[in-house]
Amino acid sequence: MNQNTTEADGIGWKPPVWLIITCGCTIALLAFGPRSAMGFFQEPILQDKGWGSTTFGLAIAIQNLAWGLGQPVFGALADRYGAYRSLAVGGIIYAIGLYIMATADAPIWLHIGGGVLVGLGVAAGSFGIILSVFARNVAPEQRSFVFGMGTAAGSAGMFLFSPLSAGLIANFGWSNALVVLSAMMLLIPLLAIPLFGSSKDSKIPQENINQTIAEALKEAMSHKSYLLLISGFFVCGFQVAFITAHFPKYIADIGIAPIYAVWAIALIGLFNVFGSLASGIIGQRYSKPYFLSLIYIGRSMAVTIFLLLPQTPTSVVIFAIVMGLLWLSTVAPTNALVAIMFGTRHLGMLGGVVFFSHQIGSFLGVYFGGYLRDTSGSYDVVWWLGVALGLFAALVHWPIKEAPVERTAVAA
Image (cartoon, rainbow, N blue to C red):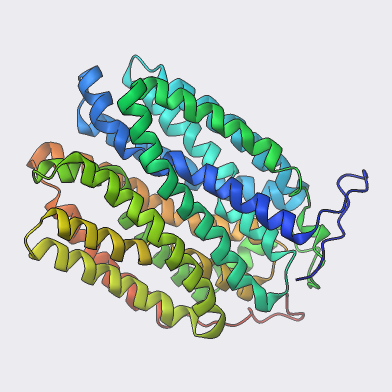
């Protein structure tokens, strides 16, 4: 890998690439951990406060929407002023949001803390910004692999924070558990120090370095393959956010012991590590659009088989393993495609726009999951809608062109 020779605002420190990747992966682990464990807080919060699933579902839906709205903004700021500032602010906002959620005595505070602030905190310190830093410090032929590493680290956070959150809730109560998680998020500003560079500090050759944000957005939004990528990533958000927020409740609804929900989410996170790493390697060697189509077909098949066969603790475990392999395996090839199409100059922002679509899907998956559960007494409609959307995503990814946008000078 190329050695990063960027200096931090004139202080002369030159962090090596291995340190940038290590700290970036650790931030991804911390940032993705608590928000992936939100489903475990639903039952104790609702029992304690007497609220309905719609109230909790709306909070997590708002969280996903705020995450999606915030990521292009924080991505653009990171591109221009350096990733450290965005990541540090994200860690602080994240901590405040979890603390407000812990002390919420009315739905509005649950929605502000666990919804708006946690969502913005994740947006400011999420995959898009971390992967854009990675892209600027490794050669193009290595990007897919390091993107897989960053995604796998987020997956590890899901694996670690699921049993951790469940254990904290069981031993200290849901409110104290959130306070502990809040304190852990304050590590992010420290870990972000080596990731200080902006897009202009890239050591990888790139063209059109003076392209403005408006010019970059205009170019991207007129590019057919980019628009198809946006529409497909919407489906990813719908599917994974629904399962993250509602699977523990669904397990309870079908009469399976709650411990299997803990293990299911943890197994999704564990096998997501392997799936993300494999995704980075596969995306490096084979067609990324075709690979993405196969991932979405695989998800639809997994859900269909899970719903049609008898649902037992064993089927829950098998479903979790299969979904884990497919869970965030979309992230590395999706971000790699954006980098291929437009280069790294505005990667944080353009990747954030794609991710905004993901989070609109997340909002709808989480909210309608809770709403339909309250109104119909079942999650079945949302499950089958996710299956249909998966087939739609497979279709729209197939014609995507894995090539740089046509312009006078081609970006790296």
